[in-house]
Length: 331
Ligand SMILES: *[C@@H]1O[C@H](CO)[C@@H](O)[C@H](O)[C@H]1NC(C)=O
Ligand SMILES: [Ca+2]
Ligand SMILES: [Ca+2]
Image (cartoon, rainbow, N blue to C red; front, top):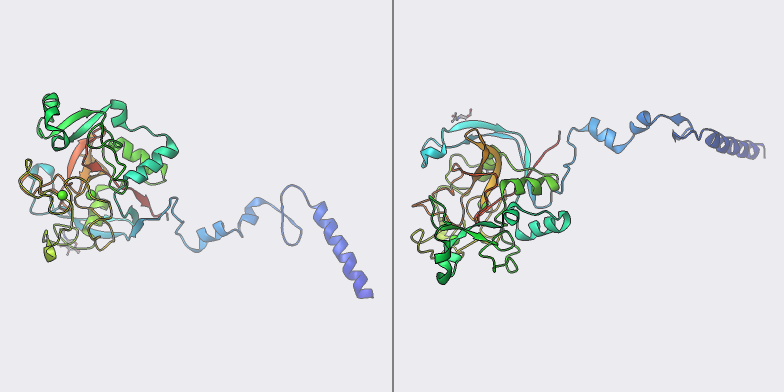
């Protein structure tokens, strides 16, 4: 009886204290008014910061792999293209980072455009470079003055952009899982930024390409076709007149075609070139691209090696140039 009374008055007191202390700040379990700072002390977020240093990434890691920080041998002591500065062979240390498993696909890019209403540079300029092989013979004459100087098989064609990669009347309807092309470096930067990501540095890209192997030519080793199989989408036949497409593709291949490397990354070499963050030879208007493309043949463009590199200006677009995004591991 006495105990009951005591209990109920305690409850009343407690309720009263609770109301009385409703001062606009947060009330703790003892009905004491807490400043936000000390309440925060018990939050998950605060404790995560103090108990382990790894914050979750600020982006969706679906279809990405985390690559541990490491020192790797970058470049080569036997450069094939001296002018590309493939050498010297040197040790480079890279911190842990995330990288997309696949080249950014047409579907990925469409999702981005649908959400952001982004317009690519090729759409603004009204044209882009495509391969003359995809132009009907009776139309080839039209394009004789718009060929790339050092690579006449590239022609600048009106109405070509990521939605129309192989001529103004072509479409990506049957190529949603192929890599997006005709995106400039500026476009690629905007895409990655939109998803909280960024382009990989050249060192990150090359370390990822090598997949932990030391001084090998390709992501899978030194032989181009081990087990008599094709491991990448490049050019077979005599360049630039005949493409026998023994690897299955005359143009782009799906982003998940061919086996991944040891880091579970697909098509680092071949398929489409991939933009990186890095500046080419101190010229900030030109950026490094890596990996070579379906246009590469050993006789002309043996650049589907991990050490190989090339460049384009930031606003350049072409039918064999795409990208994938990286992301920071936040400490
Ligand atoms: C890189 O570092 C490793 C380990 O210290 C060493 O064995 C190797 O020779 C170095 N490579 C170069 C190119 O300096
Ligand atoms: Ca091919
Ligand atoms: Ca590639």
